[in-house]
Structures are given as structure tokens and as C-alpha cells.
Image (cartoon, rainbow, N blue to C red; front, side, top):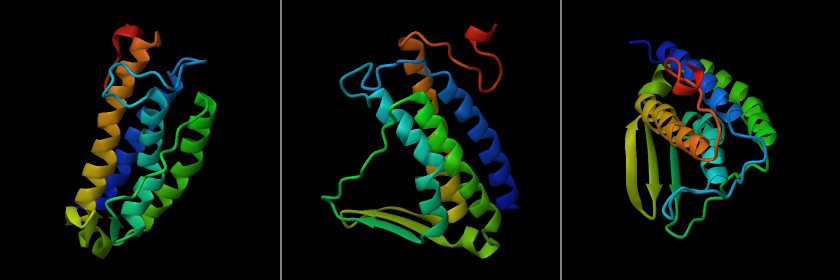
Length: 167
């Protein structure tokens, strides 16, 4: 199996759908909006999704292990506007795409680890980590963002065919 070819193709398709979803965030949205007390605020969720194709993706592609102490606090990107979110996404996407193209078959088979507070949460081949922890993770949160867009009065774009707003 050619992991690289498949992952690049999937990355390109899902990144385009993610950008389309970002563009559907209404102007002047309240970035602190959250539909439930346990939910992430909209801005944090959107920033997290942007990191899936940027900083987070690059860490899975360029590092062999990510290890944090139990008291580590992640500095979450929170956009100030839709324009800032899309700009960050567009700026970081080509770097990640270039790194995907540069990966070798050996790198795809090498195990990547995520350790937090001394506990190993991930220890899998890089190709599986990229699919699960980058692509699937991005898709999961993008679907959540679609619900937020609907709840703040926006129109949800179709990602796998037309949405109810596009019919």
C-alpha cells in the first residue's frame, strides 16, 4: 500500500472541505459561544481544527515523539476573526503538504509516540497516527463546528454532497 499517495490525496480533499467550513462561519460571530457548558468555545474549536493541518500535523510528521509533563498547558490558538482563521490555515497548509510529500516509506512505518504525564497514549506507525490523529481528528471536530455554525445562524456547507442549506 502506498500510504503517502493515499494520505496526500485524503489530506487535500479534507483540507478543502475544512476551508469551506471555515468560510461558512458567520461574520461577527461570538468566538466564545458554546452550545453546552462542557463544549469547547467556538473559537477554540475552530483554532483546534486549524492546528490539525498546521502545527499538530507537522509534529506528527517531523517528530518521533511528543512528550509533555502532567502539568503542561497547551497554548491553544483562538482566532480573532474568520479572516485570521482562514489566513492561518492557508499559510500553514502548504508547509504540511510539502512535508507529506517529503516523507519516506521508512518514516511512515516508524512508530510515533504521544506521552503525557508519563503515560503513553499513542505508540503506532506514523501512517496510522497521521490518519487517526490528524485526518480523522480534523473531520470529527469539523463536524462539531458544522453544528456550531447552524446554532449561530450560519449555513452549513456540504462536505460529502449537498447540505440541507444547499438544496
